[in-house]
Image 1: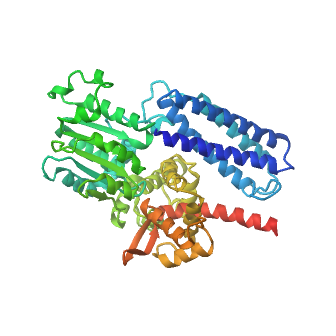
Image 2 (image 1 turned 45 degrees about the horizontal axis):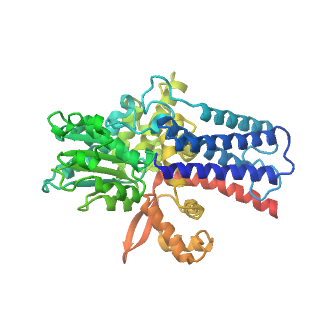
Image 3 (image 1 turned 180 degrees about the vertical axis):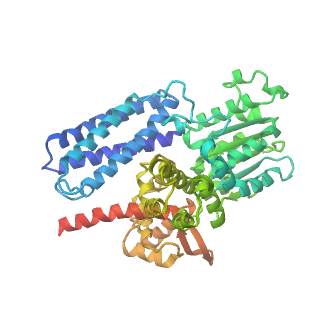
Length: 522
């Protein structure tokens, strides 16, 4: 995990601590189990943060990285709980989420958080579990065998179909003859579109053609040195015996630089999930340009990173699936045996809201398949009521992430939202949820609305500059998609369908708090 990510996690956890302390100070009526519980949360979180800081200094490895991931998720949950229960500005508890005076439920939730904090402190990987299989270790840096983002036994065929077209096109880019210089290909697209799945498929297909291969997830390494060390170890481990430099090289990792090791080899490297421009700028010099026909694939959801990485303009933009492809992926995941004309009609709303995003389609399909098997065995499985219910509540299910099937997409969308530069960007994105589904938004109208609501004021920066920078940030992160360009400016745009569902439900929670706060003040 890159050092900056650790700082970001600790900073966010500290901000949540400040919010808890503020609630304790502000609410004069708080007493008993509620007050004791919040004080316990505050003290326990301080201890966890101190331990993580100490472990970071001592370079504690994969277990430490997993604890940081769990801490960030727990801090998010605590922040949501505080925001939903105590309206900013109110002098006492306002149960916006639970209804009037349900203190036992509040105490129960606080006790759950206390238990969770203790689990963070004592968490260790399960003995015998492999990286990627443990519930917390799914973010650990992988070996040269890349992680498959979907379960092979249930979703492999559907996932393969969703990337098949892209797979052929990307292999064509890799094999195109352009001399012996290194070629870097960036795969860019929104989260959940299948960038890692595509890279995995091509990596498996082509790795035998190279002298050595390596795979690393950039966003999950502690720092740049850790990233380069992992790349070097994997390249050495996978180097073909015929390569003279491969012999005895693993023991010489400390004395050998990545650049020196790769200098006389045809190599294939995948750097997955590069989310910051400076990461590539710092490591690109380690890859010799006269690379014997070597290839690097970089996956990212940032257009600026893709453009910077790809020498020779080899940027591969992954598009979402069209309607026919979406239906095939959905029904192959649900099970073709469930397909009936009535269910096809009932599932149309789900497929529309998923917007061609493979991760969303497969997540919903898995959920429906489980419900059909466990709740309606006598009637034969999936029903139209199941489909209609999920279509109505899809955004809520993704936002909560309580069902196992929605956990991956919940994390993906939360990461998009939480990694926005500041609160102004988050507010602007939530405001975009007021526009009708399925229609392109006129950029001028969107910018005027943001300015009229004063959502993007930045002190010395004018309102217009502020809102334009927000829109550009959303496009840069593949959250908003340009639909029409005029005079080098985005004339019309739209929020990606599944992100729209997510922000609609997140905005409802925020509007509820604002409405209740307004009633108190009036």
